[in-house]
Structure formats: structure tokens, C-alpha cells
Amino acid sequence: MKKLLAVTACPTGVAHTYMAAESLAKAAKEKDVPLKVETRGAVGVENELTEQEIAEAHAIIVAADTDVMESRFAGKPVVRVPVAQAIKNPAGLLEEALSKQPAQAADYGKQVEQLKEKRSAARSGPYKHLMTGVSHMLPLVVAGGLLIALSFVFGIEAFKEEGTLAAALMQIGSNSAFALMVPILSGFIAFSIAEKPGLAPGLIGGMLASSTGAGFLGGILSGFLAGYTALALKKYIKLPRNLEGLKPILLIPLLASGITGLLMIYVIGEPVSSIMQALTNWLTGLGTTNAVLLGLLLGGMMAVDMGGPLNKAAYTFAVGLLGSDVYAPMAAVMAAGMTPPLGLWLATLIARNKFTKEEKDAGKAASVLGIAFITEGAIPFAAGDPFRVIPSIVAGSAVTGALSMAFGATLRAPHGGIFVLPIPNAVGHLGLYALAIAIGTAVTAILLSILKKPVERQS
Image (cartoon, rainbow, N blue to C red):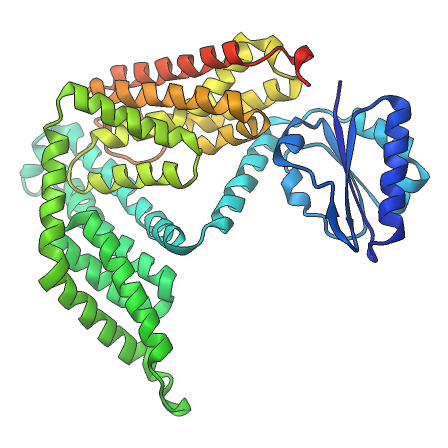
């Protein structure tokens, strides 16, 4: 049976809000149609709709003359009318909502984008600052990694011959793009914390992290150090009004850069460099068992919150290692991030009686998001049935990550999904890498087909 939701709201939030809700509820009872109505009146939001209820609904009736946060319904069929219309013709609105076609693939993609934007807006504190740095660093890593891979098309050591195209590609990718990776990461972490006054000390701290061998860990530390130093200086330095303009262009960059630089050289750089070297040596010398366990952990983290903090922690770890020429974790992370949407799509094909028509259509869109390495494509499914979907996708991604590491697969580009696989030398052990993704996808789909209940039995 199709479930409907409704929201009613009027400018004053007194009479019409509740009259419309009552009319819709009465008409739904007469038609034996499951309906929940959220009211947004003078006393606040009552009977609020949950994410799971929105995910399970066939359509939503919005009878309102004010804002009702309609963005949360992205990807769902919506009937929009003035609040008075719900009082005059509730039965007609119910019929119109029931006759709506299920969400199309484009709508599903829009819904996923809305969810990603919502998560991004909700980020705060150190996590937000770190993600700001990572997002600005990524284009350099993607471009640099692919250019390095393309240089190997001419031979694995062709770049050593000066004046050749291979040497030029290596110079652009490794000596330029990758050289900017850590400074940009550090600079935009600091920029996120202190805005423009933090950028220069952050960039300088990042350059020192690179030159001292502290790598991406040093870049993260220098970014936070520069940002919070600049923020403190901006807050506590007081100048006469006619000299305030000197703070952002002279005093703060000078003092924050000096403090950050000295700490990086004399305190932070050498210890962090030793940690990075030890981490690199450990990763490059991993035995099969330890590699599988690391892949298992990274894979599970990619799926457990589908683009949330754990997902981003695993992703940032893998991306940072690219600058140290460690490519296996990046392969495991991207493969594991592709698996959840792909597994859900496959499940809608092999267990068709356990998914609604809307979910089957959504599965087609999820497959496109999956091959593009957009893990968030699984969120709408997980929101609708978290206790069955999340364990299934975590298991599939963990298997994929473990297999990718066991197969020795490597990846030089941190994004792009299936579209980077055909690029020569971008992926090491390409056939086995594709097999790892296929097996993880199958694991997710099989578990879902076992755990999910047939649609007619679901409440």
C-alpha cells in the first residue's frame, strides 16, 4: 500500500494549519490510505516527519503558504498547493498524490546531491577545516597522479630521459602538482579557520612540512597551527582604527608565519617526519595478512557512514599517502567506496520482490553513482532500512578493501571511479582490482537479498 506524507503550514500558524491537517487525515481515513501529517504552526513543529518516513513515502503533499524545508523531499513526488486547498479538497489532493509517478533516476541523483550538501553544511570545527583543505588539495592530486601515470605509457623509466614528453609529464605531475599538494592542504585548513589572514602562514607551514619530510601529517598540523595562531592574533591584537588595515596584510601574516615556521623547523618537523617515514616503511613492507586487515578496516570505514566523518578519515589517509608513493590504500578506498551503491543496485535486480518499484528505479540511479565513486548514492536506501542496509554494505566494502590489498592493486588517481580505470598505468593489477569490486558488490547484494523482507510483509 502506498504511504503518503503531508505538511501543513499557514502564515499565522493558528487556524488553517490545523484545519488542513485534520481535513487530510479525515479523508485519508475514509480512503484507507496511510497518511502522516506534520504541522508547522505557532507552537512549533509537531508530528515531524523522519528521514526514514520520507524515504519510504510514495509522495508528499505540501499544503503551505510558508517555508516548510521542502529541500528534504528532493527526489520524491510532491503535490504543492496553498494551505486552503487542503481544507477545500483533501480527497482530490490524496488522489493526485497517489497517482504521482515514482521518482526518476535524475530525481534520485538530485536527492543524493541534496543530502551531500546537507552533510557539508552540518560540518563544523576541526572536521570542517580539514575537509576544506582536502577539497582544495584534491584537484592537484587527481591531475598530478594521472599525469604521472600517463608518463609511464612511454615506459616505466622513460621520464628519466631529459627533453622527452614522458619527462615533461613527470615534471608537471610529480615536481609541480604533487609538490603543491601539502602546501595547499595546509593553507586552506588555515584559511578555513582564520579566513584570509591564515592563508599565507598556512601555505608557508605546508611548504616547510614538505621540505622537512613531514608530509601530509605535517601539513595537517601546520594548517591547524597557522590557522589558530592567525585567529588568536586577529582577536587579541588591538590597533587604532586608522591602523586596523595593517593587521590582515602585515602583522598577522608576519607573526603567524614566523611562529608557525619556527615551530615547524625546531619542534614539529623532525618528529613528524620520523613518523611519516615509519608509516611509509610499514605500509610498503606489509605482509599479506596485515595488508588484508588494513584493507578490511579502510573498506568498512568507507561504507559505515557513506560520506561522513569515518568515510572521509579513511579517504584522507589514503590520499595523503599518494605523496609518499604509497598507492595501495588509495585503490582499496576507492573500490570500497564504489561498492555500496553498486551492491544496492544489484540487490534490486536479484531480489526484486524485496524492493518497491520506487526502490528499483532508485537502484538504477545508484548504479551510476557507484561507478562514479559517489558512496553517498547509498544514503537514501540506508535511511529507509538502516538495520539491514548498513551491515550489508559495510560487509561488501570490507571484503572489497581486503581483496584489493591482498591482490596488490594500486591507484594513482584519488577519484573518478570506473572512468580512470582505462587510463594506462593509473591502476596496478587492473583485472584483479575489477574482480575485487565485483566480489564486494555481490557480497552486499547477497546479504541484502537474505536480510530484506519481501515488500508485502513490510510494515
